[in-house]
Structure formats: C-alpha cells, structure tokens
Length: 210
Figure 1 (cartoon, rainbow, N blue to C red):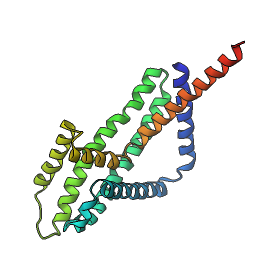
Figure 2 (cartoon, rainbow, N blue to C red):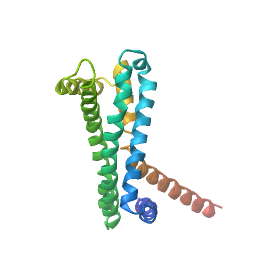
Figure 3 (tube, rainbow, N blue to C red):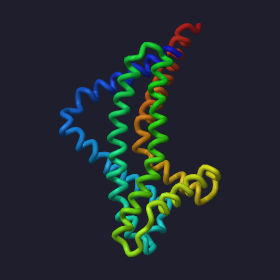
Figure 4 (tube, one colour):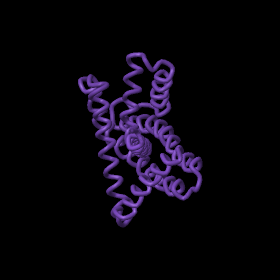
C-alpha cells in the first residue's frame, strides 16, 4: 500500500510541478482561469438542460433559461476559481506531509469542496433565477425560489430513483463536474498508481515462475 501511495504522490508532484512552471503571471492566469470555468459551467448547463429537460426550451420560460446561463456561468466560475487555488494549497500541504495518512487526509478535503459545490449550485440557481426574474413580467421572491430548489434537492435525496428526482440528480451531477475536477484528478492518479504497481507485481511474479 505504501508503494501505491508513493506512486500516487510522485504523480501528483509532477502535476504540481507542471502547474508551477506553466501558470505564468497571476494577472494573466486568473482571468484565463475564470474565463475557462465560465465556459465550462455554461457548457455543462446546456448539456444538462438538453439531456435532462429538453422540453424547457419549448415552453414560454425558454427565454428565462437562456438568460439564466449568464449567472450560472459567472457565479459557477467564481466558486470554481476559488476552489482551484484552495485545491493547489491542499496539494502542497499533502505533498509536504511525511505520513501516508496525513497525505490521504489532506486530499480527502476535496470531498468537502464537492459538498460545498452542491450547495453553491442551489444558491446559483436560486439567486440567479431570482435576479433574472426582476427583469421579467412576474418577479419572484428570493426565498420562494430558494425553497423550490431546496425542496427538489431534498426530494432527490429521499427518493433518488424516482423519474423526476433521477433527472434532478443527473442535472446536479453535470452541474458539479467542474468542481469535481480535482477529485477526479486524485482518483485517476490513485487508480494509475494501483495499475502500475499491479503490473510491476505481475512482471516480477512472471520472472520468478519456472
């Protein structure tokens, strides 16, 4: 297990070194990062809309959902950009640790970011939708809109296999993809380390076999 953790650590160290050498000056890097996450969030938004609720674009609320992509993209990019730098800090702390359990603990903090991202998605759709409604014929109350999305989230947790709830769960997963990128990176590097150690073990075993 220690060899797997060490291989994982070495791979993550290479990723961090690549970032340190290529990110450039903050005055240029931060706007580019924010723009990237804005486009990514808008892309995820439309992917979720057209794969889960395509009929939304055939109703009188179609213009509302078109406008909603703006706060979704900008507010989503704000969270993702901040969490990106938090993740870099976590990686540095993890690589500076001397014990495997400390290393694993630091990287597990990314799961907290994923939970916060879910809450942020609820806020974005509540606040963003309310903001858009101020320019529409029937403005909504912020509390009313927040309750609607919170209720959907609670129903999805209580009965995730229900048809509509399943769509909401899927929608939330797609919208959370950008915030889940660090976790996906850690899991990918961990899986690669396991695969590499398994191949090494098999190679040694084949050499020892008669």
